[in-house]
Each structure stands twice: as structure tokens, then as C-alpha cells.
Length: 339
Image 1 (cartoon, helix red, strand yellow):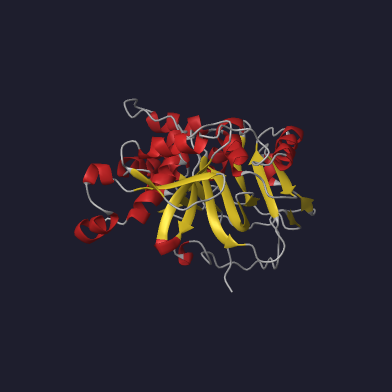
Image 2: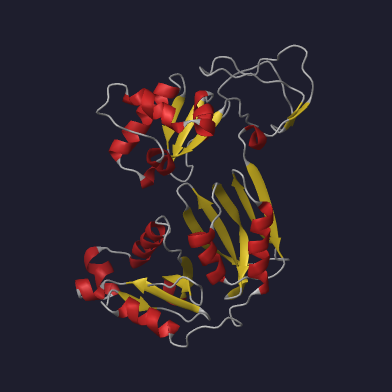
């Protein structure tokens, strides 16, 4: 049994460096950088005992060093650890304080204990006098709201692409959930949107048991009725019913094959699926690239997927095909074209 006995804050490194005003030419740049954060993020860092700077694979060494300086300026007594995919040794965050107070199975949302944690990490779990049980939501304190929508049927992936690229509501900080798409009804796709609108649509294998399609949105000043209307509209419209140009697939295919850098892979209804090969550039087959130069095209295509889905102008989906080939998918017939 282990206990989380410190306040742990996780920072999205990429989001942090791109939303923090940094001008090292100014003498008081650290103070100005800290003040530029404001709100929730600044408050959380100030109160942290441990700061995990996650997703450092998305930033360079200079940005990493700058992040460490800013965090240390905001909360000088906090321990700072850098990681990717949340991979950090548990001994860095668990059982750090031996404490005589036993809290049992306590929810951080509803608790009879009144905890006080100082910004220097030296005063954990101090019971204050005359306290009463509270029903406290950190979402409300941070002026955030949460909206959950359960889908009753599979939706068209093209509609989700359009929504993520062009219609994502302002104030959205996080989207997560699981969906079934009309293009692959038997497959469960895990959806994640975070940071600077980084999108992940991951094939998670076939559904087991009843399908539980849903999306959870967290953000500021969310218009739940408007969002509900958008999602219900997705349920009503099927990609087979939408009007589209017969040659849309050919246009997308010609675009991809114009410079002989990509090749079509697999056949998915309503989708154009492809992968980068670089054949027109390197004049080598995938096998030759791997044998002679150690280039794994699956890893290259996953890197392309990650880079494209961070850009905000396109959303691609990861598909696994025969012979251990990873392909990228774009759903056609949406209002946004691949070109």
C-alpha cells in the first residue's frame, strides 16, 4: 500500500512554453513570465510540492531549461521532474511524508478533513479547527465546467474531423472519450484532445461487450446546449446519405501520389488511407530503407501523424493494416478537404 501524501501538479510542457510570455532580454523576465501564466496554472504551481513537466519530447533543451527556471521562480521549494507519457518513478511522488494523520479512503472532492498545504511543501495535512464536511469541486473554483455526451450510434469520422478542425468551441481545454465510427463500426477509437489542441484518434481494437460511445469536454464557459446540438447532428447524418463528388477519392489519391512520396494502403469505406514512403525522394523501397539505413517507416508515419495532429489544420487517424503496416487515414466527404 502506498500513499500520495504530497500535492503533485502535472504540466504540459508544450502548452506551457507556448502560453508563457518569455523575453530573456528583460532583466525581470522570470517575474513577467510567471505573471503571464495567471489563473489556474499559476495557482497550481504555487501550491505544488512536486511538479511533473510532462511531454518533454515535444520541446527542445533550451525550452526545457527555461521551463525549469520559471517553475523554480514560481515555487522555489517544489521538486521538479521531467518526463514523457507520465513515465516517472513512483518513489518520486508516493510516500514522501511520514504523517501521523490517517485519512483512510478520502475523496478529494468530498471530505470531512480540511487540508492545508503551503507553497513550500513543509506543512502537509494540517487539520484546521472548527471544520465541517465540504462538497467541493476544483472545477468550480477554477471556473471550469465539464460536459459529457453519450452517443447512441456510430458517427461519421469526417464529421468529427470537421468539428475538431473548425468547430471546436472556444474555451475547450480537454476532450476525451471513446467512439465508434461508421467507417469501422466494430472498432473502438480512443479520442484525446489536450494542450494546444493536440489530437489523438487511436485504434484501440474491437469493442468487447456493449458499446459505450461518449465524449467528455472540460473547459471555460462551455455552451452545453450548443455542443449537444452539434453532437446530435452528427448522429443524424450518415456518410452514405451525404452528397459528394464521385471523384473526391481520386482527387485525394492524386494529391498524395503527385510527388511519389506517399502510397495508398488498404481500403476503408469513406476513407483515403496512405503512408509516407519517400520513394520519390530516396529512390529506395521500404525494405531497402530499413535494411540499409535502419529507417522504420512505421515509426516515421507515427511521427508524421503526431506532427500533423498538433498543427490544428488537419486530423489524421492511425490504422493498422496487414503485414504490420501502419497507415494514416483521412475521412472524405466532410466539409474540409485533404488538400
